[in-house]
Length: 539
Image (cartoon, rainbow, N blue to C red):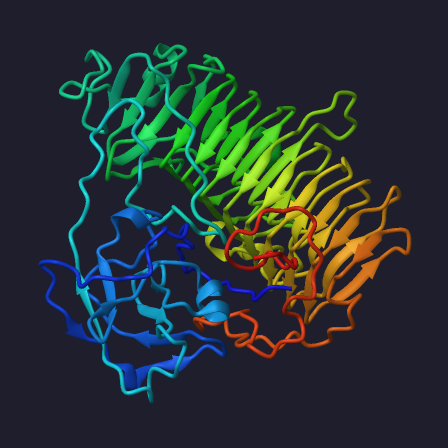
């Protein structure tokens, strides 16, 4: 098993290694400043963690080619720069990385000496400087939007690539616009309903920053080669707010309204903030819908829901704090997932084939991610915690003293046939991962920490489990399941985490002497540069 690196609420870039040569040069036009190596602490491997403020944002924006921080040992630049923490810890070779918490605090560099020596005692000097920023891309209809809210990279791998926008006309909406306008940048529309009823295949709507009244439907459809796209205007945050409509507490599940309804197919939402829905934040019944870089929170019912739909995608997003407070405020909690997909309670048609990749999900009263009766979904690289708890900020005060929902981090079933890989779940109320009586699921390279049950498998044909790690949690797996090289199969009762404090930079990182390192089996998954990929791979 590989070293496990995860930090709560921290967005870390595990950049693709650049192919630098062995000889490093001092950066031109770059004034070097000292690094206080006396403050360095070891991470148990080759790497040393040095806290400090380095005068540039931490590299949590998934743009390694635009990095401007450089590190030097005795005036020799350390390269390759901005590699994974895992490679620094295990391999050394002069790599470094730069990271911080989501709010910018806790900033530090992690580096190893060129000869992998102790930087505190090797007599060498370490300095840094700020180089030159590469030019930003020009705005176009295919521009990848990076919203101002920190959404690009909450999971355990670099940001998933964005789907290309269509090649058709471009329109604009603004909270200060007018629906009688032509929808241009200079004269934008006011409402999202106007935009949704106007755009056709290949066209893109840019949302200027500010607050919009929620509750609108996208009924038109794009095509495979020309999607309809609603995206944030560069460097601005459009907020779709549902406060104007309150939840119908006499029939909250069916009489209330979703903030965004996507009924068309081949639709893209990117860079939006969706909050305070009377029901579901984003409800999707169309096919081939992509939701990317969104922040969905404080909803009644689910944050993002797919119903009788297929081939949907949710990537690079944060979904949190959804709580259904039941009929007239009692008996709530059991219907609000962060993300869900369903083929209906008694499906006669196979729906699913969704991909949920690189998302941060937390504080949802039922489950973090529930595929329910949909099938053939891919759940990977997600971080999920505190599923199954009450949310007092969203109407749940009357249910504060009773258990909320099912409390599973990842629930795949009873549809079955799902693949769950490279996820981290922790501090969930009941389970880390469960097949929920669903057949033929696959669980590879996942980590469960501090949950009543780490893995629960009960259905035949049973699941396949390889390279998973569970600690501080029980295991409830039927004998028919195919298991190999999981921590419980290897009798690893203590993986020796460097820290179990979610606020620590080494949270759930394996120490250098951990019995879990390199004990997995290669299941053919590409190594992403850091845990929770726990397989034994060739280098």
